[in-house]
Length: 206
Image (cartoon, rainbow, N blue to C red; front, side, top):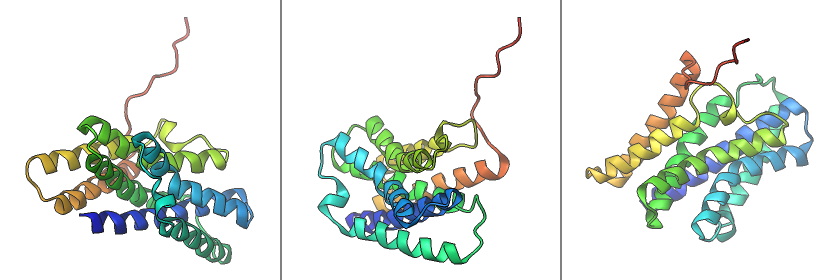
């Protein structure tokens, strides 16, 4: 399980760095600005998780994560400059990154002996905070705060699924893959069919 967590974590960092750089392209940022957004997107959620759990911050303890974020950001920046990139292209890798980071974050919290409910929220934090930082740095309202398709909800369902599957005896690796699929499918279905949570309506005129 530890090996899976490590490689999935690296993949999540790469995917989220890619989404950050792609989104920064809408704001016509230069190389440093794009890299800052990409690195913040890739490392932000896991950093908050580790600080809350009082453990060594993952990219400080192992700089392979930082190198992955910077390398992916550089490659994405120069490729995206040479191509015409649709403005919303980042949403698909963003959904993949959400799935990967949510499960990594939940499993890390469980291994740190965090109670199940708090562990599930650590998974959500790991999955969504990077995107929040990306949107703030790009001067946008974060996706997770908007009335729109399921985002944090998809992450939370996946985190709870991981915990539940392991509780009923499903091997951790199988449970992790299944939970990642749940997050990704929920997010993609929500985007495709505009599935949303109830929201406050406009106040009625007196």
